[in-house]
Length: 336
Length: 175
Image (cartoon, rainbow over all chains, first blue to last red; front, side):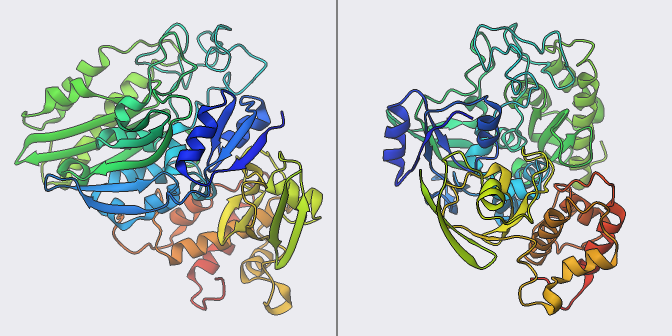
């Protein structure tokens, strides 16, 4: 492991200044991904600015300014505390379910809300410094295109990178229209979680739209009827402690048997949490039936590009989405 | 070299360490506290689990400089104040023959103690049906909650038996 300088941040402003001023500086929070990358040689920072001790640990229930409720979650709230929070469990079950499906209890205690969003791909080639990888070393090529492909993307990939984003929580956050609040060298801004992560294009080394030195200080979760009736389903090779092959975050608000609002976001299929906007659009205002769901999902999956290694993901995500929405409808008394 | 202070199994230590030192290496290589084990060293096996500031943590993914000031309890320190120096969870592991080679056991025991606390606090898990109800610690719950600790001897059946006994014990002795 290359050595580095470690400084403990005393406040947000000085932490941002310290990282922004050094191209080889990185923020360190829970460390569950970055410390592993230090060992593997995937990350070789000169300076680590440790934000773990910053008091960004509150979960506040606030008014959104127009009569609604928004949950403001500090960046350093642990994944376990967020999953166990009574308001998250009651009002945003998809978020609790996604968090609980991820990693192990030990890791959930250590990992933070912001760090979860900023974890990097588990692509085996990205994590193996002996192999070419455009994300780790731009311009070296992509080993995954011709290599081990079971975990590769089927939506929005590029000739530079075919990997997927590993976070479960990010998929749930995209589904409920969450935003991140950041402080960067240019000041504070809000970014919808669905716009935080990028598609790889020809710059797969950039996972997100954040500038160097821009720090996520909070995540805002709006409560909505579709978020209150939501859940998360993760298909994986083991029953626990494994990354998703595909996952579905879904929320459903019915008026009788007519879809008033529906949320569908997919994990394990793209370089970012994939909000299935076309499928949602096709379903809104329609009578809820399994046929309608499958037709809407097929519209979204028309854009999918697969290989022999990833072809299974299309029926898996299609049928999982129908299963999950069917369950949510049944909970509201509507049999497909 | 940075100076760090840790309280480990009730004893305070202050020492200089290379900035790259993990809490696991600090415990084992610098302090001679060898209850936590190095299995995978990448956060995948759970054998390095300790209670850090009261919660189960993986020490292999924690830099010592980042956790400066923490209170660590390892499997060796859990027995403090219990009859024969044996924590009820460790005692249950012995009685249920919940190990073969024993390498993962200190991590399993710390993890189980942390898990029982989480159950008492009402934390849900991935397999909890109703996120609003009290958790019933059935076998599915216990398996899921212990999934971060691997046992390559495959002693899971008896690990589950030991953990089940303590989860259903009402004597409060495991806190």
